Image 1 (cartoon, rainbow over the protein chains, first blue to last red):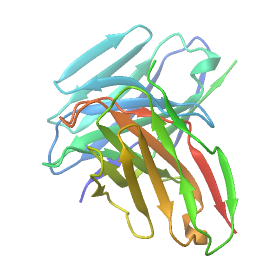
Image 2 (image 1 turned 180 degrees about the horizontal axis):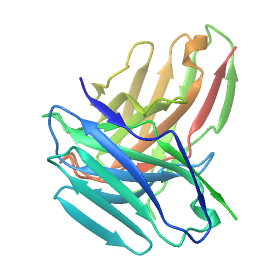
Image 3 (image 1 turned 180 degrees about the vertical axis):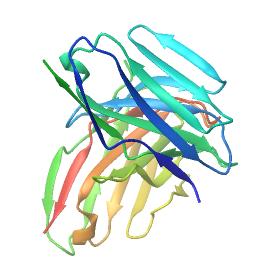
Length: 110
Length: 114
């Protein structure tokens, strides 16, 4: 089967660093996305990884290890506005369809 | 900015009613998608379309149909709504079907079926 696992909820403190993990088991792999979704709003694109390694984009970085079926999203200098759900999605198999994790709700406390 | 607009943010319908959810995008994207989002589950693909008048079933097409008469508009139809179709429905679009294109989502339509 195809499966994406993420923690359901995480809590972190404003100004700190948090790492949100995503592990996947899919029949193929053609890339991995991270999206951010604030409550009641549309998911918005954060990052895309297709090769192993770390991609940095401002306060957010995303890491991929294809051999381990593992990715993480690293958020630095947390701000209250980072409170949101973070969705991991893998482009799997031969049909290039996205397989989505259930999302990680990140709560930022002052 | 690419915009994907879903006409109804909140709907309440009765079992057996026909429901139309409309989605319009303004960036000339070829591909459009309908997902449903339920607590504790990942987004599940209902239908998608990669061209006008073309449609493909996603993972959970049962109980739904779609229409794409114009490139910018993709409609989701529930022929006879049931309570298990109570959900958040998200429309999305992307620029080409190469597997690596970013999806742009609408804000969602929350449907409650009584």
